Length: 582
Image 1 (tube, rainbow, N blue to C red):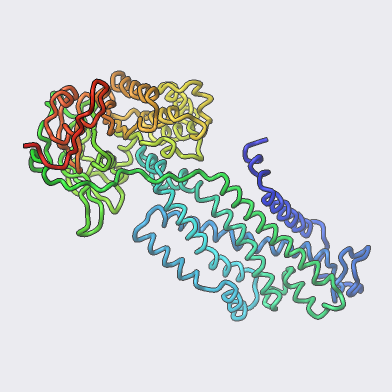
Image 2: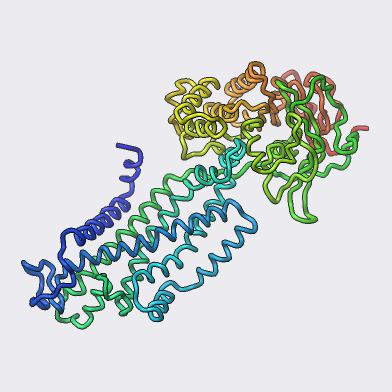
């Protein structure tokens, strides 16, 4: 039995609802292919349930069974025709609104609010009275009423998913907005939208029946509401005229509601927890008193560059906030990176390390913005690129490994499919070739039984395995520069060593330049060749790793090194207050 069927049987409400809606669907099909003409009268007037007429006849001698079966088709037609277009339209607008944000988001929300204040039943009643009873008119009115609720629901889900790290990771790999919406955001939005649609279908059936009961139904169409309206004069004479269509209507609406309730129950039990977004946007401490910083944020000591730089960052400045309250999180950062170099960026939380990386990748979202500086890659200034041109660079030329692989991998897509999709996005290969390449990359990063692991979901892998998948995703397009943002933070020391060995092997074998961002000085000492120390958004010191650890020049670097516990004696950690040493 498949996983989906097993989940389905965990919700008795969903099973019962689907069976009830399925029974209504079977009745509608029987009305089309089996039952007779529901409008043909006979001499058997107001005859109760009997052999020729199992459910009796009405005041004109028309067969009640045939009319109930045809009425099922009308009710289901209204339900699906009123909900399906509204769901598609509302979901599309909600996705655009939630993902795009800003002006477009506000415009769509205002339009949705405008339509939401209109009472559904009252609008249908007025339209029917002014334009005459029509099933098509009712369907149009219900679509107008339903789409704003779907749009707001989809917008809320899309806005939350936009903040997830796996969406950020897809952007870092060069995915277009349309691909991100279709592959990463839409699957997460569909579950609540489908639940909402099932409830709206029941409402649509109830509105149609209510209008028909009030005499505003289409007389040329058989419906359960019309049957209830016709039965008003015979309440004390022929019970079957109102009990049977009423029971059919209640049965089908209950089935719709149970289906929605079961789907919601299933969704609530299967949801993946949404971790808070980690983007390093902590407030930076004020930069006064850093002593020996030169103008423009130049470090007090710079390692000598002997080769032409592959990546050169000059005076990079990034702000967060609006108007006069803007906070300079990255302030005049400059450094160079050679091909095959292992470069470390170290500093406390909130020092601007991750925002520096996101600025290089072009992934800083409002209210943040890169205010000044240059980012040169292979002689090309990335800041001058359009968003479309930048997407071609991400993943292919510069790639990024995010801090938490569980949140940076899409939880509803198998890891092999995520890797194959990234390969197909940047290389002109067939689907089969992309899958074979994906398996090969999983092997290259040290995942055992890679072909079997190809079909695993992220939660089925260990932390070390997930991080290896993240590295494979970043390397599958053979980038020139790899930015690793705290890639070993959540791993034990054994797995940390394996991941660092893997990154070191990549630089040695493929010449990939690596920027390792961490707050762990031991990791920096064992991996990096050159180190930049960041404090309050600035690079306060930069030197080769041996010189930095042997003769730290800046008071903050000295304090950072002194804070490390030592096995050969007590730590002489001091607290750096932002004041330069005399």
